[in-house]
Amino acid sequence: MPDGPVAGLAAAESRRPTRHQGSRAKSAARKRAWRTTASRRRCGFITGTSKGFGRVWAEAALQRGDKVVATARDPKSLDALVGSHGKAVLPLALDVTDASAAFAAVQRGRDEFGRLDVVVNNAGYGLFGMVEEVTPEQARAQMETNFFRRSLVTKAALPILREQRSGHIIQVSSIGGVHAFPMFGLYHASKWTLEGLSQSLAAEVEGFGVKVTLVEPGGFDTEAIALRLVEVFNGRRLDLLEDVLHPEFRGRGISAFPPDGAEVGPGARRKLYEMFYQAIPDARAEVLDVVAEGDKVVLVDRFGGTHRGELFGRPGTGDRIEWMAIHIYTIRDGKVLEDAVMTDALAIMQQLGLVPSLTKAAG
Image 1 (tube, rainbow, N blue to C red):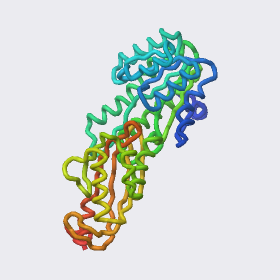
Image 2 (image 1 turned 60 degrees about the horizontal axis):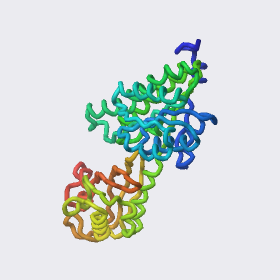
Image 3 (image 1 turned 45 degrees about the horizontal axis):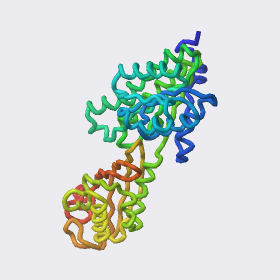
Image 4 (image 1 turned 90 degrees about the horizontal axis):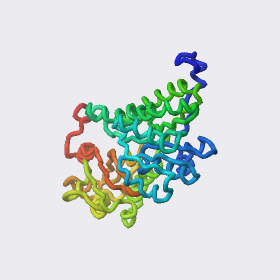
């Protein structure tokens, strides 16, 4: 019999889940979790295989001859996998928020291939917003998908793995399960909860020959794409905007230079940047922080430059002005689909003398 859940701190330390933290070496980091399972042919159950890490791991496993139960909300997104690998892949529709469906999918995968060797809990999403503004409904939905429903997939697989006395559960966490950043409070809460559960689980199942691994990736392609847009702005390379922006690009939020009408398409962003350069010819953006998760990137930057042209109706003053902005980018097909930006317009207007400075008023 395995040790009980309380077996002394030393024993608990020895059963901590294996960790694989993210690096920017994309190809190595994305495939590491599957490669470390074993060299023999195996059967894996992977959630969230329509895109991203889940898709990469499914393809890597199938290419090496393993069998995969691939799940996604829309099974049509798995047609290419089936077309390339035939009966080696079992595509299943699975919404991880459906408890009964999770148990049924795991059981069907075992029935189809005879066993389960690796279970990858990958499906989830990121909720972006300040703690104060996130609604209770949004918070519950984040925890439900990223934690509670993942635990259901794990619970559904455990009887099978215990019976086999072997198996490997891979919990896809995030660098956000180790470090916390602004605008990600509830997302971090869901990941830190998953990390705590996984540490306890590792101790509980070790005696059955079952391993638990936490994968904590950082930002990969999505982060680089957002940084590329900053490079385009600073380098005045407007000719490269269509290489960075999605054809259906849209901008929204509070901007220092609101365009006429809705900002839709790369052409609208070009117009916005040209307005920047006319008012502040030497304008530059300095990236202060950037965090990527899934198809979202949160980027905080500081703009600065010399006020030479009209800005908020005020002619050029020759003074240097600075302000902060927070961008939430959505990435699709390797390009920026949306830029939801919040600019400190009040700071700009204060520096231009259009509104009283709070500091001066206090003095």
